[in-house]
Amino acid sequence: MNFLYKAIGFISFIVVISGKLLAQPYIVDKIAGVVGKNRILYSDIEDQYMQLTAQGVKPMPSKCQIFEDMLAQKLLVNQADVDSIVVEEGQVEMELNDRINYFINQIGTEERLVEYFGKSIIEIKEDMRDAVRDQILMQMMRQKITSDITVTPSEVRSFYNDLPDDSIPFIDAEVEINQILLYPATSDEAKFEVRERLLEFRERIVNGENFATLAVLYSECTSAPRGGDIGWGTKSDLDPAYAKAAFALKKGQVSKIVESSFGYHIIQLLDRTDDRVHTRHILMKPKISFEAKEAAIHKMDSIVALVRLDTLTFEHAAMQFSEDEDSKANGGLRVNPLTGNTRFELDQFDTKEYYIIRDLDIGEISECFESADDKGNLVYKVIRLKSKTEPHKANLKQDYELLKQMTAQKKQNEIVDEWVEEKIKSTYIRISEPFSDCSFRLTGWK
Image (tube, rainbow, N blue to C red; front, side):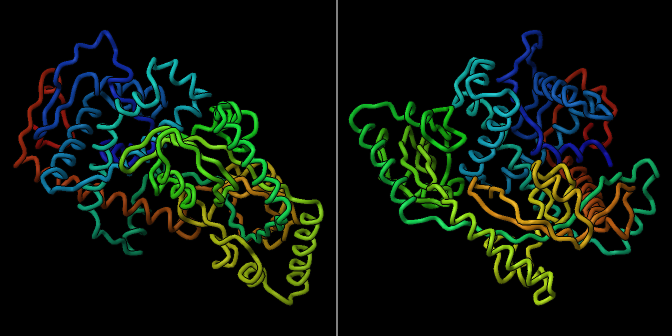
């Protein structure tokens, strides 16, 4: 697969820092190339080269290859503009938030990120905004060009048979699991206690106490160390109940108690635009009683007993009793959010699940154990190991879906190649030295 379009497909998943953020003082920032109305600067190429080097990309592309990649990206962006393709601001904001969160996870804290760049989070995001918007446009244009692609089984077989031996992917051990989830009941008394506590905090804030200080001390959200600040979000980014309350606030105002799928909140609006809000909050969850936990465990044990006695299949038990809306309709079969299929590598599970699943035989059901859902709420689970593969080179029997995706990617690359070659003929393109001496993969650039 050529580097050019592999980079385009991968670019939305890597950290892209614009030249404004990491501008190198020794680079004379001249124009390396122009595609339509879009410019490519020397610093853009240098920044991308440094990022790929830091990520340890193998094989490492040359600067000529990076430049050709950027020419193709700009051609896609230019055509998206011609075709009046529009990127919603909320989509850009969501991608910016994802990247900022990635940076924070890498560097440790938001404060360290601000210190590193010498800019506020808002300023960092504004420096990245145009580049992120262009990348989304590029992906939308590429999708438009390749939307009609289909792949047949014979094409998958031909693709696999033509792969050099050293290009066949190595697949780590993978598993498929079914699960049943039960949430222990929350008493009205526990909910009342949380509401009373939040009402107390709200009154103290209204009377002059610092919201951020109370959030640090009492909030049960991971944002607590930041004073409850969760940054900017659109309605689609936020829990519906949280979003409704946040967008109804005036700047500086504190909400009444809001119940969401995460728990109970009070929210303060820090800033807003027409479609985005910047908020902080204090989150509290009702305490689960020992009796409620015991009742959930007892119910789960009764369900598993029916399965062990062959009164119910595990799949039917999941459909009938599981409280996990994402998997119950599929008989408890869990979908990997990173791939969209049902296979997981073992290290994709949290530590507790890893050790439970690792020791199961195919068809075996685990004991009931305590866990947490993706919102941090307490759940009880049982897991059945549906299938397990040993580490191996990809083959058509075990890895057909992966090979089908690779075949589709190859076809997409070929179609985009043809589109680029044709579109070059009708687009203004200028290439400056020393890149005018590059040996490009696609001959049309010159």
